[in-house]
Length: 412
Picture 1: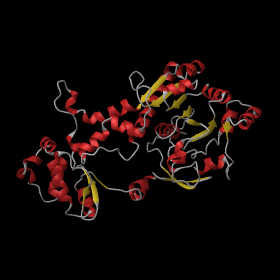
Picture 2: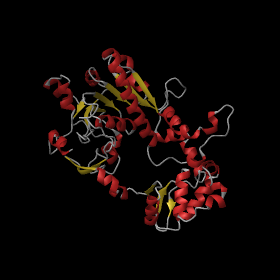
Picture 3: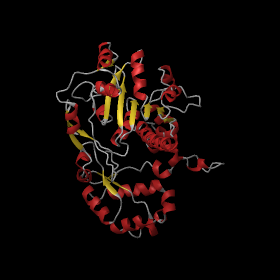
Picture 4: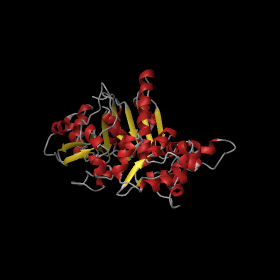
């Protein structure tokens, strides 16, 4: 199942950036082995949760994976990891490269062991600049990549962070593309390679693709920024009874919209509405006038009118209303599953679809270390060796759940 079926991935990531990327790879059919330290992925402890170690954020970034818990600071734990990596297709990590080398898991070591390995690192900064060894988190990268400045310019002047781990998720997406591209190259050449996905550089490119603007030129034509996106008036429009999201953008859409509201002559009365260029130059005024107009009808009236006029529009959802969106309901986007220890869960599957190799939820998010015995057996460890690692605390295994792993897979 899935376009990456048969690909084995050693997942040494934690928190969100790395796990979100490896979850997508697992959704695509790869066998993802999540390697956790004895303390476990910290997102396991972020509430809410029914049981400690199975927090909601963890659950939504770690399906389609198997979990093994190894103490890599112990020689035998380190040796076990090397054995797992010896026939893997990909190893993914999101700690600093310097820490990987201190663990004896640098690229040179693993490439000598497995020349076909794709060694993918997600970390804060490119390794040829002065920030190379600095730690990084989503908040820092949002600020450093100009995103907080954008929010200040578009708002009340106060810089803020986007209330979502947007840097982690964007860089995770970039990592998926980079890993898949490197696998294609590996299959053509027979050799793996090291691929670095730095957060800072990735996000600077992501943000400035819209906002480099006049700074794209030498000498600069302006001080940067895309005025439409920076307009304080660019926001969901308040209606008589709520809010609606709409974008009247092209000349055709403006003609249709103004005709639908009985103001077809507005461009003649106010030249600032006459052309795409004039609207762009006067975007604050244009959006301000739209905000006034939208106050005249209810959300339901606007959505019906905009639909008839073929104007792009959407209801503004909250956390709960989006769960009942009719489109998402009909497409089956939200999946309800029965987890053997966590009960009924709502999961967010990969939105991409394939005609021949569909991506499916094959495994539910694992408890810490629950698949360790199975993973080591597959790697050729004897029953005695597995038992010895458990007795010495080098591999941690939780108490068995009420249902088996086979039941867990079937419930997905």
